[in-house]
Image (cartoon, rainbow, N blue to C red; front, side, top):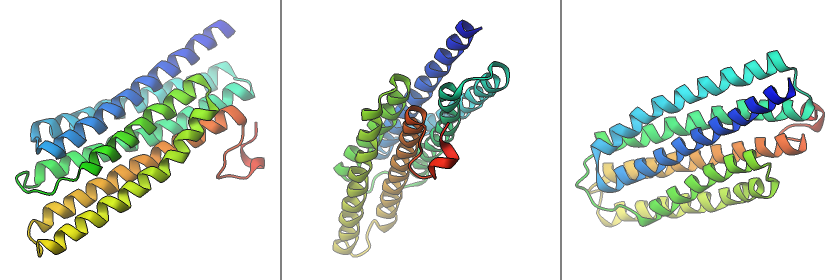
Amino acid sequence: MRNRFDSELQLLEEMLTHMGELCEVAITNATNAIKDGNAQMARSVIEADEEIDQMEKDIERLCLKLLLQQQPVAKDLRRISAALKMITDMERIGDQTSDIAEIVISSDSNTPAYSDEIVAMAAEVSRMVVDSVTAYVNKDLGLAQEVLEADNVVDNYFDEVRDKLIDYIRQEKGEHGRHIFDLIMVTKYLERIGDHATNISEWVEFSITGVHRKAPDSELRG
């Protein structure tokens, strides 16, 4: 019975890893789409969001099966519970990459002022997502905590890009204002993705330590 349970736990880790990879690709493609004004790539991001949504449902079913049929001990229960929380954040990451893609489709791709910092910001949040899932699979508390620290880097990027784009609007006296606003929205979505990666890492911490930093110990210890 335990061997079967361990096999299904491994399957859970593999599915979470795949879902994380889908999120990584979606972030990269959404960023490239906004950079190049590539509506076709943007549409592929929206289509990929459907696969991320399906992965959430499949992982949720597996987690519920493990909880209801296997009666896991406390350590395993934490890992399964954390996985259920993690997939919610990953599904929202898929939604936000789709929102970025919608901006590409609806905006004027010929306008200027694409900020290189957005590329760096997207790379950082993508790394956060991948590292948070890797930390879960490898039970790597140190890596999870690195992701938590990286959220400050993303927040700084957001402030920098926002201020730069606002200055651009002032210099251009409102010309291309809608496009600049779209870019500010892109950075906001990227910041939210960073927040979701942070949430994932907090649940990784919980799966390892039994303590969630945003809740009283008495509620989540197990």
